[in-house]
Length: 384
Image (tube, rainbow, N blue to C red):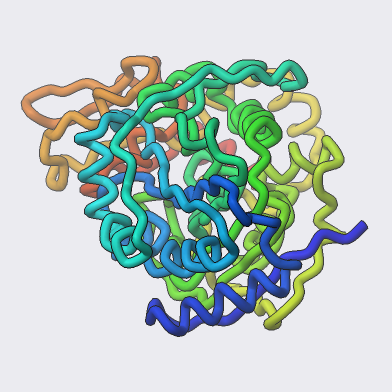
């Protein structure tokens, strides 16, 4: 059975244009579920308080447009998220994040009060492949319906950040580094994300792809005009469409590959309704993305049997000393203590580093770049 992604072209964040595009994309995807009288969580991507101008977070006008649809359908709207690794999930911090990401303003426009409470609950998922227990923020536990409003971005660790990755925001901020420590391999981390999505089961998803982020996202990349709003009843189908839009092979994205292996999506059977989606062939992919690889003898018999080589192959974080301000954020969030401060500048012990890239993800100053060692560059010649 085909899975549908609705699409609508959208050239700017003008409120009227965004509202029309969101309505068209949602309608093309089959429409929202029944919301009348139900508590509806609208969950944007609020990675940090870096703001929406840099395409780090979901644009507030897209949040407004989806929120308006929810209210018009009779839903009782809540807006909530928990930011990225290492950011405290407290009322004071969340007030700042909501303010800087433009959510406080659009919530006011919608007549919705932002709840300052930041509680969480333990949830069990016995069917999980790699995780059977999660801590989940209260709004996600209390909602009758969850509508994810994600952002199109690259991701240096998972390669792609969209609908599936956005669900990770229901995990409180300081809990996130623990998952990176437990699942340092992107394939295992992606299996965890699929487990989480199957527990939370977002009922509908809308993607802000008016501007996306290319390069080494999800914070260190560059804004790029893409020009679409996407919508779907399936987080997996929407991600497939978005990956094709930026010329990624969906099965090279391990969240999609993990979902496909479980029968949750078939990339070949995801169809687009609405405006024609034209792939961007020059979209800059993250440095960790590998084009479709040859299944060589070396890959089958050497690399897969000696996984420790991965540490030497994978890019490692390097601090740009002239940009680093010594804020210490990378030290606070590193799940294995590989980030250190010396002479008021950050640095890394690469023997401890697990290549989770939390430091790069959360550096607001773009002071951390990823570089392969000489051995890694040599291996890369054979593995492309």
